[in-house]
Length: 289
Image 1 (cartoon, rainbow, N blue to C red):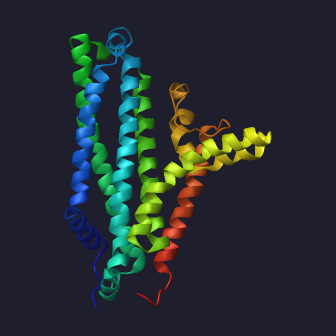
Image 2 (image 1 turned 90 degrees about the horizontal axis):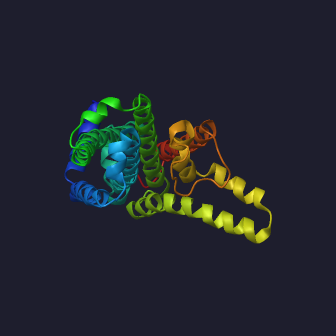
Image 3 (image 1 turned 30 degrees about the vertical axis):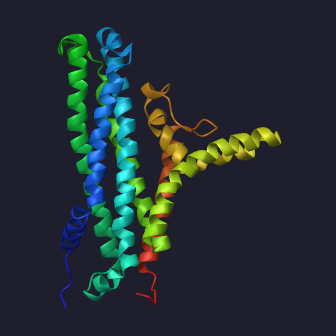
């Protein structure tokens, strides 16, 4: 029996995603949310003046706003799409048919994850085009043109590179999380619940650790725990690796300061853990399959 090629498997998974109404509705919802942010940003009183007097600072502010929106929005889309794409095979029993046709367990999983990565890159490129157009339109409406962009700080290009790096890291982590949750529970309901609840719980633990430290009077053991949580490190990794973002607001940061090396190592350790769980569960024989 001739085994399907890797890219043949990717093409098959792409067809499945294209037929998911929820995927297209999420993308449509994202565009609606993007439109709402344009209205909200135009109501900010000091940003037009900042754009006229400090164009580089204004562009950085807009980059932070739209970067946070994409990080959250793309994470939700990839978590839901990834959970459905991987876990529904187990819930519906179609995983047995795929294996019977000669598709290896690891190849099928990697094909799904590769497709999710392509979707993430595609969303990022589309978002950059749309959001970039919005930023230029807003800037022109506030300053009367685009002439001021000729005098932007040279460091903005480096900032944009860090921005893309962090967005890539974030998307990679949510894809691995979705794969790990689907493999661990082998159930669509479990994968959806576990993957969507992970980051809210992870970030909420920062508050719990802060209250525990205050109640016990011993801060070190509890605050140290937050240094190794995934969500808080993802929240501050851009600030930590890019000096110009040192004062940028970060939601639920670790209770102890961490540097860029620490944040990247913690994120990398979680990535390895998720990959081991996802691949380990994929190759583990199961009599039900």
